[in-house]
Amino acid sequence: MSTGKPFVSSSISYETLEETLDIKPQGSNLFIGIPREEDFQENRIALTPDAVAVLVSNGHRVVVEQKAGEGAHFSDKEYSDAGAKVAYEKKEVFETDLIIKSAPVSDADLQFLKVNQTIISPIHLPVMKTHILEKMMEKKITALSFENLKDDSGHNPIVRSMSEIAGSAVMLIAGQYLGNFNKGKGVLLGGISGIPPTKVIIIGAGIVGEYAARTALAVGGSVKIFDNNIYRLKRVQNNMGARLWTSVIEPKILAKQLKTCDVAVGALSSSGGRTPIVVTEEMVAAMRPGSVIVDVSIDRGGCFETSEITSHEQPVITKYGVIHYCVPNIPSGFARTASQAVSNVLMPLLLEIGDEGGLEKLVWHKFNIRTGIYLFKGALTNIHLSQRFNLKYTDLNLLIASQR
Image (cartoon, rainbow, N blue to C red; front, side):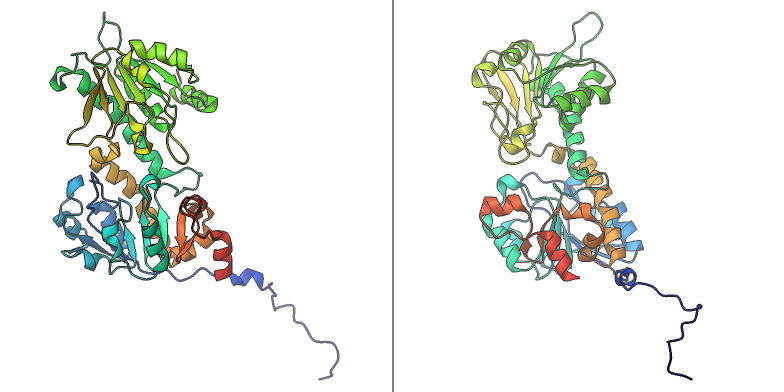
């Protein structure tokens, strides 16, 4: 054969190399651990027995610590029937590669952490401690937070579900404290024909405020919503499909409305740091005796000046004759519903992590999950945490790109 031009057959197909680079990895079987939460008032569990059954039938292994589901009324037998192994020692649960918690990583957990472990849990920024973060960085842990985890639509599904629960629960709680059973003034929340409706003031038109308004309207209350974000007020109007009484937070208008209301709900959220106080002590002092304040914002400091943290055992304090309900983490008081809501988000996510061959592989494809990752193999990738604790920040996108 002559050494002329190279012979190219038309039957050979050429393909640029870039197209063959990103080959989908082989799926991997996950080894998941669910410890029992010792945290103050944490009754939730992040995976229900039904979710565990789905994971096990997909080839994943799950270890659940004894009595982990007790607060949400899921028994050890339900978990073992679902195919999980029930462990009697916390240490055994932490031998797994992927830990799923419904409370933040605590001091008690630190001694059990394994190098290169993955943890999915809440952060609870107000109570986060520097040494916990440093220890997790030292152990090269990858951590994904409930609060910042986003779904395909760009929303935070777990936060949204918890806010829906808190908002709906607010009116049930207010109704209890208006009644005689809890030394309330004996008023039926909502009212009946011929009696003017109960007046409800809601400060904050986010998800909590919206669901509180829905529940109050459903029982026949008269609702007035305050928020400084006009877009949120418009969104509530649109979502309700009815004309609502809305106003920006103007102290004189707010004080006047609080004077005559039966229930006041604090549902302001803050993107970082403390919630602003919008109701002063004078405004509370002018309220009717026997009226009820439910401050959902207490998780971030509260938006009533008179609010003080209370517990599920001692839920209320009375100041100026006004009943204050300031229990943080309201969804934990409805732990079974809350556990199912968290589980509905995490179970499909875990199946996806398994299919992709691990969380590190999944974040390469799914950009929305990146917002939830605050530690990646020990590197701190959350700018708020790095600023607050003065720790080195690394850009997650650069980290992921450098791993390929």
